[in-house]
Amino acid sequence: MKNLSRRSFFCYSGALTAALAATPGLCAANSDPDRPNIILCMSDDHGWGDVGYNGHPVLKTPNLDRMSKQGLRFDRFYAGAPVCSPTRASCLTGRHPYRQGIPWANEGHLRDAEINLAEVLKHEGYATGHFGKWHLGTLTKETVDARRGGRERWLNHYAPPWEHGFDECFSTESACPTYWREGYYDKYGVRYWTGPEELVPESELRGDDSRIVMDHALEFIDSSVRNDKPFLAGVWFHAPHTPVLSDSPDTDGYDEHENYYGCISAMDEQMGRLRAELERLGAADNTMLWFCSDNGPIPPGRKGDLKGRKKSLHEGGVRVPGLLVWPEKIRKNRVVDMPCSTSDYFPTILEVLGIPLPDPDRPYDGISLLPLLEGRMSRRPQPIGFESQRQTALIDERYKIYSRNKGKRYEMYDLVEDPGENTDISEQHPELFQSMIKTLEQWRESCRQSWKGADY
Image (cartoon, rainbow, N blue to C red; front, side, top):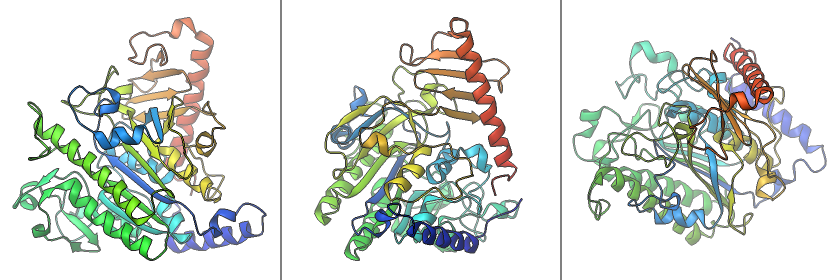
C-alpha cells in the first residue's frame, strides 16, 4: 500500500491552496478573519432516547434540551457505525470506516494516508485540540495502556492524535471510568496522555470525567481566543460508556440507574459550561458547536421506539442524538428530518471555509450540509451506506434495506411510517428494493477497493 506521508500531505495542501488562490471566489473564506470556530462534541454509547428533548421520562439534560431549541435538531442523525472507533474515523475524514481499515472497536487505526479534518484546518491556520476518548490507534509505545497500547504486537497501530494534526491533546486510547477516584489507573488500566510518552499523573484525575475533559478543552479554547486564532476542538466524552460511575450531586433525584443517569447529567452540565464560556469570551456567535453520540446504547440506555442497540445496524444502533448550534448562521431553530451522518462533518466544514475537498477523486461518503444550514436543501442527494461485521444497510430519504448476513438476504423498511423496522415491505416495492440492493453492492465494492489502498 502506498502511504501519503505527513510531509507529502502538507506540500500537496500548500500547492492546492496556491492554486485555489488564483480562482475567484473559492478562497474568500480562508482569508476571512471571522472564520468560524469548530467544536465537535461526542458522547459515547449514548442512545437516541437518552435525552430529555426526545422524551426520556427521568433523565435530566437541560443544556442539550436548550441546544435543541436554539439551533438544528437532527431527528435522523446517524453515527458512521454501531460502535465507537469506526464512527470516530468517519467524523474526521468524511469517509466510511471500512474504507480506512477500521471495521470495529479496537481494530485498525487512523492511517497516515487518510486526510483528516485536523490536518486540513491546521494547514489553514487553525489551532487544533483533542480532548477525551481517541480510539483511533494506540497512544504509547512504552507503557502497557488500555486495550492495545505499549504491547509489541500492537506497535504498528500507534496513531496518536498529536501525529494526526492535533496541536494539543488530553486523550485516552479507549474507554475510561466516567468518574475518577484514587487507584483507578491501576484498576482500569486506561490512562490520559498529552504527547509522546507524556502521561498525565493520576493525582490530577479526581471526580467526574466529563468535567476533567472540559477543564482541558476550555483552557485550549481560552488560549485560542486570546491569541485571536480560530480553533478546532474535538471534545469526545466517555459518558455513558462503561465503567459507568457517578456521584452526588449528579446522581441526586435518580431512584434507579443513578450512575448511568448521573454521568449523562454531568456531561450535560459540561455542555452548558462550554456554552457559557463561549459567551463570556465573545466567541459563541461565530462557533459551530456540534453534538452527537458515537453509536446507540447498551442497557439501561434508551433508544426510543427504535429497533436494536449498540453493535446493530438497525436504527437503535446508529440513529443518535444530533445537534448543531451556530448563532451567526442559524438564527432560527429547526427540526431536520433529512438523514444526516457523522461523515458529513468533513465536507460541511470544508465548504463553510471555502476549502475544496482534498484529492477530489478520492471517494467521500459524507456530503456538505451547508445548503441545509442555509435552507437550500431538504432532501439528501445520495444514500448513506453501512457495513459492520456481517451486517450491511443502505438508508435513503425514506427507505432502508438491511441484511444481517452480508447481503445474502435483505429486508426493506419504510422509516417514515415504520421507524421501529417492524414490517418488511420488500415485496411491495420490488423494483426499488432491487435498485437499492444494487446501489449498496456497488458502494461496498468501492469500500473494498479503498480498504486495499486504491485511494492512496
